[in-house]
Every structure is written in C-alpha cells, then in structure tokens.
Amino acid sequence: MAYQLILTESYTRLAFRFLKRHPELKRQYAKTLALLEANPHHPSLRLHALAGKHQDLHSVSINLSYRITLELLIQGQRITPVNVGDHDAVY
Image (cartoon, rainbow, N blue to C red; front, side):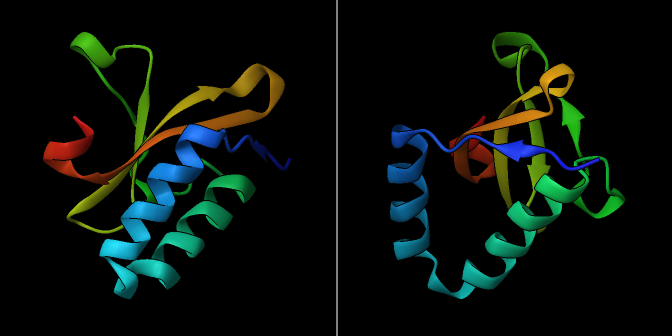
C-alpha cells in the first residue's frame, strides 16, 4: 500500500534551504522521502508521534541528527511534510 507525499510550497522552500546548507545529506534525504512514501512505518525511519505544542505532528529521522516533522493522514494515505532540520530546529 503506497502513500502519497504532499509537498507544499512552504515545505519545498524549507527543504531547498536545508539541502543547500547540508549537501552531504541529499542522498539520505531522498532515501528517507522514498521510504516514507513506500512504508512510513519502516523501522529505520523511527516514526513517532510528537507531544506538547506539536501533538498533531509526527517525526521521522533522516539520520541521528536530522529530522523531518510531518502531518500524517493515514486514512487518506497522504503524508504532508511540515519541517526539516536538526532536532532543535524542528522541535
């Protein structure tokens, strides 16, 4: 069961800036998005729900230092990334 990534204009701008600052992560970032679209529950993504002010969001890991926060609308098989960055920037 494939999921659909919905890339908003604001997220695309954030991702562009993130990848410009971290060109060494382009391959890992692309792999994370592809895996997220294929199976958001894959163990290597470390998908988890957030709490507090981000309680409606989830997070997946690009690597141990960088995360993508996202709205996960599983009923419609839609995934909308919201932010990308290191742990402190995303949370």
